[in-house]
Length: 165
Image (cartoon, rainbow, N blue to C red):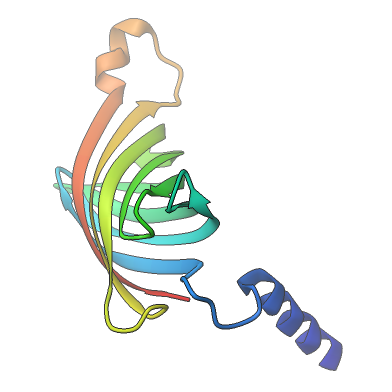
């Protein structure tokens, strides 16, 4: 038991960089999606490079959520690359993922812009506001005449609260 505990502690230190950091490296947020499809989503991201293209940061993250159009649910999961051109405030992202639109499995391409605001001290609570465009294309086999029926898009505004460390 003692070895397992020590392994977990050392793994946590290695992943997080060992303690207090000048800038937050990890962020987890969750909140509302408001758009054609409305619902909620949860995001996690990790900054990989500081000083990316000047003072910017480059981060990789994942997003998962559920949105609804009337009574039709859409569950989604995507992997995102985020670029913060001015030291972690404003960002642009591009992602690729999977969605299940009611009964139709689909690939998902997503892109967006946003603004992350530190509330109080750095490495603490954050507010994240953004706009996202999602494009869905069916994975199922179909012929080209049915293509219009099996493609969907969504524009959503995101309002999230989270924590950075």
